[in-house]
Image (cartoon, rainbow, N blue to C red; front, side):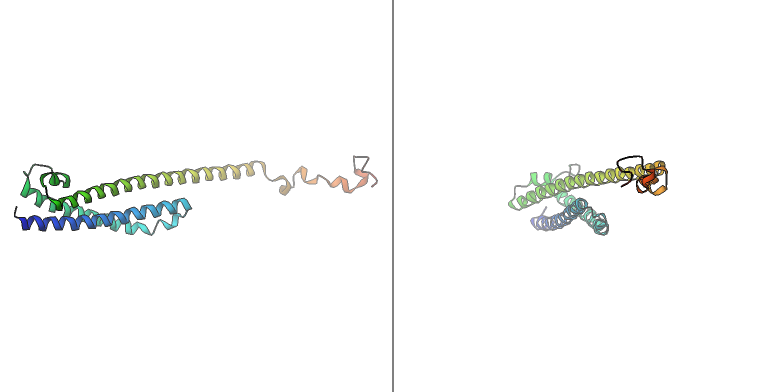
Length: 182
């Protein structure tokens, strides 16, 4: 593969990786914000970001498709077609200082992927905890409302005990001789 074509493909690959890194970094920031909202109990704050997350996912898929095309062009020039075309494989073939930058990109992207995966796991856990807490609260409310229906509020319902204390007002009916006549 001529040096000029390698340089062009390399520049295009670096550009794509830079854009992918920015997309995934923004995605990670949105996940971090979602975690803060979940911890504050602000579930309404999560909704508006869904459109941005969808747009980022679409952009990431498009960039990945372009990156695979560029990697295929580079791979065709340096290795057999049947070999796996990955950045790591291409980097292993070249001993060029420019490819060291790609190695750092690869490591950075893998680190961002790991952070995204970890953050998604934490957010899913927080959502599951929230759902469990809501379910338990709803069950408690249901139990309380059922117990009020079963037993009623005696003071409000006018049951037998609603007359308690009325005998003290009428001294002649007072059962306690110490209070009678006072």
